[in-house]
Image (cartoon, rainbow, N blue to C red; front, top):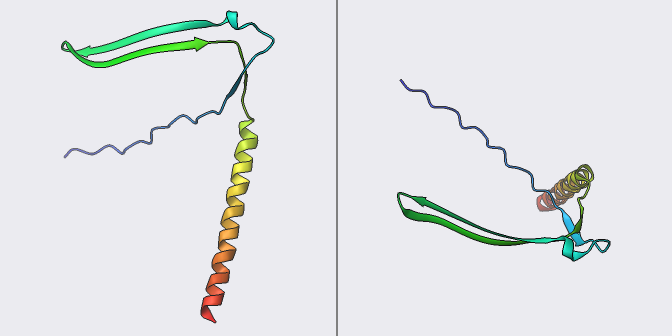
Length: 97
């Protein structure tokens, strides 16, 4: 008898919110332009074609504090759940009268 393997959870990366702004202390001529082309074939049949142009320029990158953002989100979620529980309790009390 063949046993089935348990499905594993595939971890997905957590997206990071980055903010990029032009760095006024650097010249735009320090940037660059990249052009790329990727083509995939299987048995001579084209499967995929990607053409890309990417502009690279000096920028100031900032990221929010993930710990602070997580704490604020969790606190907001707990408040929402508590508020919902209070509203539900009031509706149940008023419905019984």
